[in-house]
Length: 162
Image: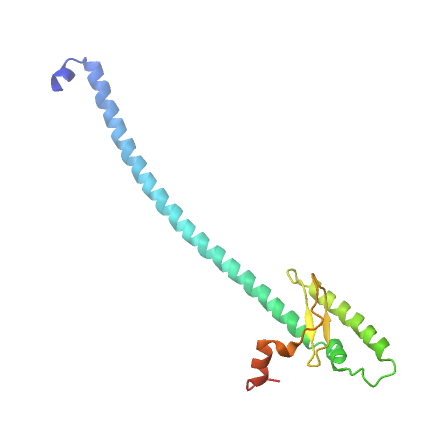
């Protein structure tokens, strides 16, 4: 191989030497740049991932706090508590009052449902199984009994149950 290189002209030999001297630093520089770029992108991706996760957690926490606030506001509303506590059995105007209360409760719950996106339905049942709803995207089971729910029995039997 060396004999073969000896046959080249001085110009060709210098050109090959300069080419090699140029290619080696460029290759080293490219390898270092690649490693640094990969490290930089990995670091930025990790930071970005943590920031996105934090923002998602904050958004979910805020939404759940709003849902909690909405449920408390609805459950302890004077309007809804008054309607749920009414007894229509011994009242001459029972049908009219109950119909009027159903309409009022429905409008109230519909308004509450619209205050927060993502809520499809709001249902409120009293212990007498009288139910009120704000919006229904399907059918309601007319034979629904809150006392049949497993969670209801657990709450009733717990120390702080109602």
